[in-house]
Amino acid sequence: MTRKYRVMAVLAALGVCGVAGMSAIGQARPAAPGGKPGVNWQTMHNTDLFGGDYREIVYDRPGSTWQQCMATCEADRQCKAFTYVLPGRQPHGECFLKGGVPEPSTSECCVSGVKTMSAASGGTRGAHRRDD
Image (cartoon, rainbow, N blue to C red; front, side, top):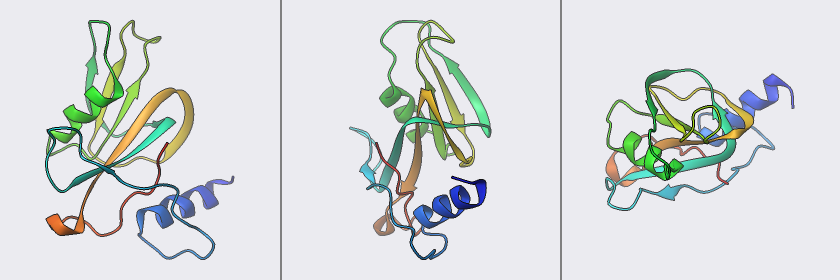
């Protein structure tokens, strides 16, 4: 897929523009267990959201998960998205919190997610529609 069509697909999925022939890729997930009401997540397996990091967490114990990274992002008002890097580059994984939503790229190393607000909570209209 060319960059132009990837960008169009992302914009259509975000509900930013109506692009003919582009449909939603998935459904929003509810907030993490015990998470904030009105927050939904679009998780993307095998996807890196490269750039836009404002905080990096290097886990120092086994057992870290992308859900743990998502919960950290959910608890942080500044966080709009995250990328969890599976153990390999670091022994127990890494979590990158993002202040914006970079363009997704395919990468087997990562699980990423985008925070969206439900319309009922007064959040933004149009959810990111990408899911595993």
